[in-house]
Length: 193
Image (cartoon, rainbow, N blue to C red; front, side):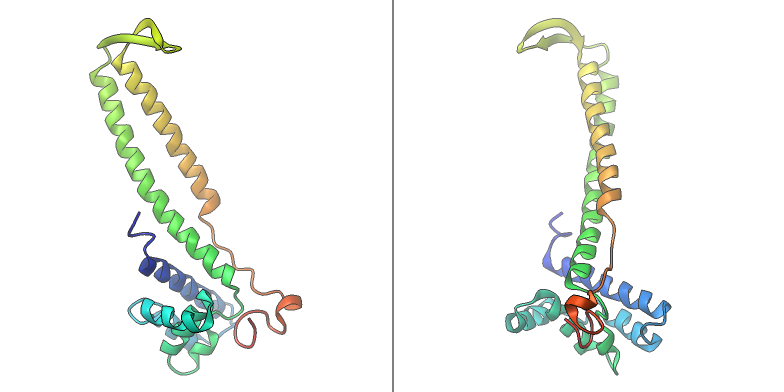
């Protein structure tokens, strides 16, 4: 999790979204194909460093504006003019956070799946090992350790189902762009906010 949420990976996810935006706009004929290939090629922390983005942010006081400027600086020709074209800051932040959440859910899913496997093995190994049952903090009818492990396994299985359901709702991207009535001509991108 620490690796997923570190600043360098978060930056790369935002660059991935900028690259995907450029590709989609290229496919729709909104921006030139030459600009698309240059933006996609340079949308990497190999070219856009965290240090440079932070340096620009100290001046601009705006995280996404600094990312856009740092990426545009790396692009050759006029490709830099098409970085972030028509997008808003939230388009990039929300979609990149979705990518980070998807990675995080994958890690959690793997951990829960491993725990489930262990609990099921323990349930099988201990199906006949009798122990005192408990109710309201007191001894109750006997049960087995296998039953206890099986109940825990069932709970973990429900957690896996919840993660999957959560993933379907959280792990989405959305590009709404700037509204013309609030952002002036053209919305976000060159000449807009």
